[in-house]
Length: 135
Image (cartoon, rainbow, N blue to C red; front, side, top):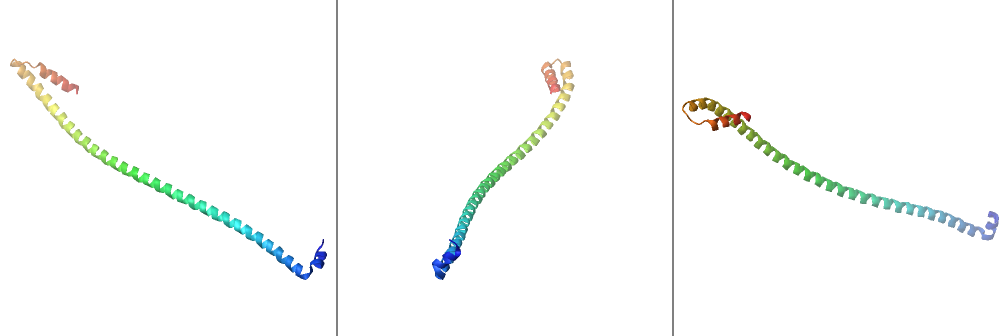
């Protein structure tokens, strides 16, 4: 069938109805495409929002861990500072004790011969002096 045969059989009202139907079907297809595209867009947007929410939650958790580790490192730094101060104090004490050992050794070197001349047993003093030199 060609267009002229259809036009004769349907008449003008039939042709108008056929044109309206063709335009409606085309618009319906376009509407279906638009609907599908809209649904896909909504689905993608929903997925992206969900991923963004998950990423925000993950970032929040990571921020909490960073804060926790930072606080822990801060406490450890304070402990280290306290230990460093203790160590400095102990070094000062050791330095003072070293000075006392040197002074005592000097005094023993002077006292041992004098005590020995007077008949005192100085073996333990000599052993202490040797031990002090080994330090």
